[in-house]
Amino acid sequence: MRKQQPITELVFDGDNNIDPYGAVVPPVYQSSLFTFDSWESLEQAFADKENSVIYTRGNNPTVQFVEQKLASLAGGEKAKLFSSGMAAISAGIIHFLAQGDHLITLKNIYGPTATLIRNVLVAKMGVEVSYVSGECLNEIEQAIKPNTRLIYLESPSSVVFSLQDLEQISALAKKHNIATMIDNTWATPIYQKPLALGIDLEVHSCSKYLGGHSDIIAGALIARQSLIKDICLQEYELLGAKLAPVEASMLLRSLRTLPLRMERHQQSALRVAEFLQQQPQVAKVFYPGLPSFAQASLARQQMTGFSGLFSFKLNTDDLAKIKKFFNALILFQKGVSWGGHESLIYAPAISCSVEQTPEHMQRMGISYSDMRISIGLENAEDLIADLANALAKL
Image (tube, rainbow, N blue to C red; front, side):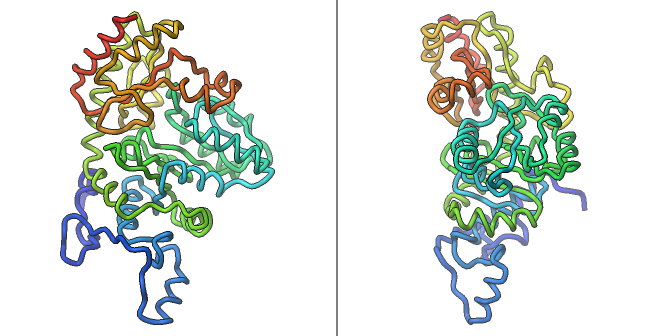
């Protein structure tokens, strides 16, 4: 039988449906605990806590069903859902690191992840950190130390959307017995499969494209079974960041349409990016889907498509003018996060100036002229007209 396409795997449940009546929407097991018929059956469940349904803080049938869908989509053996993307990121990073260990990561990573590294790993755990651009393999190789335990990636990276060569980095890491972890939220498993390129652990903020409707907060880790088992029995269970069954059911609803939504996000984003790079008020557009993108060749080598999130730099440093442009937008709502049905605009410097040190902001190269936009499901020409009107204010 031919291998099914992602849209088919996400829509068709077949014999895996957990509803005994054959409902096309699997039931929500809104229960905190599950009972057993004997001492022996309960004892057997505790002997296999990774897979057994005992207490919803550990496992829940609804959540497990969605985890199976995610693991299959990403090409991983097993997935674990968390109550937020940061819960998943924290559990994954902490799993690999202990006091005195060394971490290599990017200058441009998700803001809260950078804060976790600085305020928890460095300040409280005594972990050493080296920051790299990630664009050059030699740069990463030179940063490796005898105590390096993890290389944490995000491709494309935050704000500037630079890429890392995942296959080369994973090979380098394996050579030195170093674990690799990547935030793959931007591309989703639809357009990028890091596990197939040798990365050990893949993390997602399911609040973004996987959720897709701006009504879920969730996170996921995907990897080989042995690694997820270790995380389940340690960080996941003890930190208690479980995903509620209702939210898991909502996530399943969203996964059904993920390939279709990603195709629309990509098509509209490319059209908007092409428009912006032709405008004199725009200094530069950072979108891996553009042929003019500096790493376009690598983008097409390790990704099969592109999402709807990108950034551009306005051709002015005048904050009053920047705010005038920002506030003139109507269809682009102003807010954090991304990946939902709605188009959003955000200036990363707003939060970075509060959450990050001046040194880290300088390292990231962020200024108030940098705009990040998430292209939703609206008509692309309507979004372009909205941007054109706001750019005219400059």
